[in-house]
Amino acid sequence: MRLSGLPLTLGEYPARTTTNPRFEGFDLAALDRIYLPPMLSGLVDALPASVRTFLEDDNRGAVSPEPVATLDGLGFHLSIKGVGSTTDPFSSRALDRTLASALTDSDDVRRRLAEPRVAPIDGEPERIITGERWLRGSPYGGQGLEHATIAMRVAEQADLTSLHGFLIAPVVKIAYFPAELEERIRTLHWYRRFSGPIVQEIRLVPSNVRIYFHSRSTIGSDVRHIFDLFGVRSNAEALRFEVAFLRSTVALLTLYARTLRYDPATERYLGLDFHDVWLDKDAVLAPNGSVYFVDLEGIEEEGVDRERVPERLEDQVYRSLYELLFAYEQIEQERVRRFGEGGSRKAQLTGLLIEALAKDPFVRLRDSASGLEMEIRNALGDEGLYTTFPLVDR
Image (cartoon, rainbow, N blue to C red; front, side, top):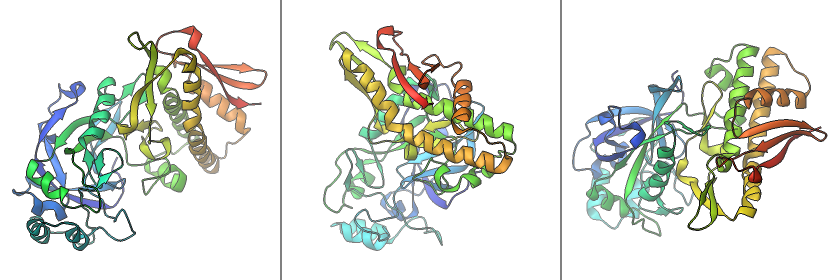
């Protein structure tokens, strides 16, 4: 499947990388690269090995239009996180060469910005990686090693794309910027200079379609286009799409339970939880309806005392349940609009959930006097920590 989006031209430069151990059996030498926009080409002492057209993805990412690998029976596309941004973070102005030149005190950097080694592409907005410290551990427009390492740590735990049923877009490599490029980029800052290593995440993603934010095509903004893009042509295909969507998003809601472990040293229970990342903007939709979490830098292990485990499990469900139901509602409305097979809203969702979770080892559904309940089990098999959550009320 060819993805749609605005073109983004990047130069490829040989780079030092570290590889996800899960992918060490693959020939990935062609990915020992960093990818830079034309505006930054003058900051590198060498010409690019090649110049390649990607599509923009999110505010600092790029994705290949064509798939480069097959995982889970699906085509996965090359994704680069940290290729520069196009907008001034402190205004609505374009982050172009004129503004960038005003940020640096280095005459050499100004000269290099004025003399790019790769000519700007007509019609493409200029983009740049800056040295401004952004969020906790990344430069604005780029990616920091601290965040990339967290993402890699999560990816290493998965069986390529699945972490106990929680689907991820895996980080394959971390690519490091050469020291001279880092130092030139660091001069481009407004207030706070980023001091850590600057890198890029080399990832594999099933699409560039997000749930609601950070994509030009989302379930929330253009579900009709998504049905067309993914070739959902019949009611049966739409129902399979919904089942895959629910199966993968319920796994996201229960990630803590799926990764729960006990640490004897601290006598605490640890599991993976989400920080500053969300279903609506940090996950992408595959053509079969499955949701893959792509921005892994906000997933870290958290520990609580035993009596707090049920509360943590419930908090994680509540954190993304609205986003799940919102997206499901858009998909279901489009299915009914196209194929005309509607019915009771609650009965429809209940039936799909039962099908989606029939083989899930961490979730059991049961009918009760109040409605459909979800029993959340855990990786420890500790029945004392099983937690019941009301999913669909009567």
